Image (tube, rainbow, N blue to C red; front, side, top):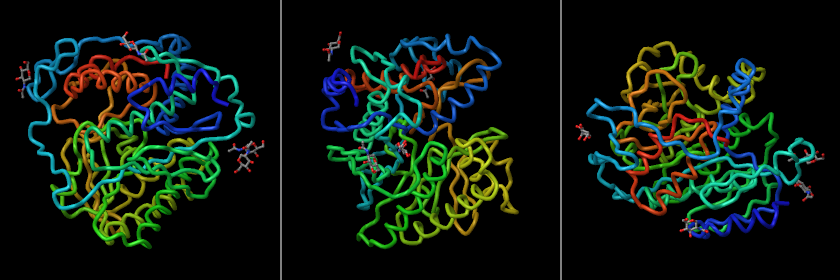
Length: 395
Ligand SMILES: *[C@@H]1O[C@H](CO)[C@@H](O)[C@H](O)[C@H]1NC(C)=O
Ligand SMILES: *[C@@H]1O[C@H](CO)[C@@H](O)[C@H](O)[C@H]1NC(C)=O
Ligand SMILES: *[C@@H]1O[C@H](CO)[C@@H](O)[C@H](O)[C@H]1NC(C)=O
Ligand SMILES: *[C@@H]1O[C@H](CO)[C@@H](O)[C@H](O)[C@H]1NC(C)=O
């Protein structure tokens, strides 16, 4: 059980009360991308045993990268010197279209088989709130839902989960959709694609009148601007993915947008079925956490006319792939991650839409949400993220 103390600390986070999740469980296994990064950091640890000791349990605000680039956010401490998001008008569903953010979030009711009893006693302090490991995963999920409520008040959150996980959520913008499947740890990425496909099939069967778009995401992201604009600005795509200039992992599976027309849902479903097939036939032996990304890249790159050079420039483009019109959006705006370690880093674009707190950055996500709670200032909060994002944190 989540201890009474952790339960209380979750509740004491007053701003989140409406999102309080009542979870009679031990282990939460939600933030899929974190697992990717944990596995890579495990590899890194073998090379450099000191990595772990460098993970910090408090924020370290350093200089904000991007000085000298006029189109980047400039900061003085946590004070933003630029206006951000000046070009996007809040569409706020002018055409009556809504966007649902859909995420897979799994909860286990027993931990012994996972050998996680020790880690469930890990306690972290963020601000003046104490979290057990499961409680802090819930806090990240809450922050995810809250950022969406702030940036896109008309949107809602759909959590696809194992019917056995007994996730009960009391929040006006969060809906739980149990989808049967094998959510065990080793099968999670495969199950995630399956759950996405099942969800799209359900939407095809149920014609709910107007158009509701869907964005499948990891739950460790902060939406900091209204991104419904992509459906208006790029009126012809069926499915949208985010790319970066990275030879081995050019696509991130943590963001998949689907246009909510019948045609869009149908084509996206067929596209994802091909990703699932590639996963099952080619990548079952790949790292269990990277298989979906490798399969996604395989489906895109195996298309004869696809030119991988397009990934080198951070500019949106559209391409027909696997029967669908696929919009490729730059990670720099739609899936921005604070880089870790050294290397070229030109700061944060002024119109960043989504910040992805991959790997050891969940603490920063909670700190950022706390900061926003007390300031209601997104540009200043982005300065906090930019200045603190290169440090590895304890979760
Ligand atoms: C952002 O602020 C910096 C520092 O004040 C300034 O040099 C830069 O021109 C600004 N950029 C824009 C687009 O206003
Ligand atoms: C719970 O424990 C049982 C018995 O050890 C095991 O078979 C089952 O897979 C576990 N459930 C989960 C969700 O891990
Ligand atoms: C946490 O600390 C801040 C500032 O020290 C204080 O204003 C706030 O009330 C505290 N919150 C809780 C829940 O104790
Ligand atoms: C855990 O979940 C399984 C699958 O739904 C269920 O059969 C079992 O009774 C649950 N165990 C407990 C202790 O709640």
